[in-house]
Image (cartoon, rainbow, N blue to C red):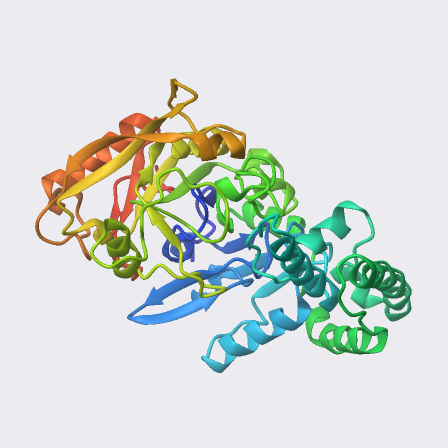
Length: 444
């Protein structure tokens, strides 16, 4: 962990595609230079998989910095929290020998995910499917309904757990509303008050000691000269405002939300690191211009899917796979103000004879070089590819740029020149040590 004899420098890590870019490994690697790691949006619909000394750990709600001894971990106000899931994740980490409760701090302002949110989420997806309108592809974790209650100013928040009577009153009102929707519109069953209340009060006994004023805590680290790492979940193209709406998540995944979702000013965000796979994947429904046939043996898409082990951390669903979409990446670089990129899973491309990169689209007879904002227009986009020769040998575990095959370096340099942002890191495998560093986010 960083000492306090240097100036604080804060780094934001965000996904630049549709999530699953490998942010967890990068956050873990960077945490060696930070005093604290902050989650600022999303919920346990996110999944970060870390491989440390060959051992795999999957995290959903708790910041990836928990894997580094002595690092403080914060769940910011922009995160929606399922108290039962949070406690189960804590227990799983504690059973593995990690010290969690002395290092994990939760914002009082986090909205709570409660059982009726989950039921509404699942019932809506079932209704969409049965009506033929098409599923959004949510994880069914109650994330969207919980954010809806937040925006409607009726959410139960973590701070309500401190006041049982207040919690009970608000819960009765909120449950009545959701039961009305469950029974009357979604054709599902109503939920009872007592089990939900008792479950929440039992969880409160363990959660309340971890409550904190997260914005003040982060400010304290910076005043002491200690750097902080902000960890985003999902990816930019799933952002509720800037993604492929309506096939998006229910929060802002972009770098700017690191400030609003944790309680600090935007002037405290010094470097934005965008994480990008060397190809593209997507879980669930929604437009995907460069998608390949990924479930048929012998195809390039199948190679990406199997070699990349492309299954969702949270749901286990197979990820759709395709070529790198640099035109979509250009949109993400613009939205986030990316300072530098980390390219992950380069080794998955090893052995391919040719590699394509999408550098634009044909849309209604016109060539464009950046992802459109309208999902229906994205569906109509025909990708325009540049083709590169593949490379022999392996990039797996390489830690020196010059040790990469010449064709791999050429591929990365072309991506860099097209999107207008430097590649500062390259990940060549799942372990934290499988990393090429060109410019350090905390030192550059």
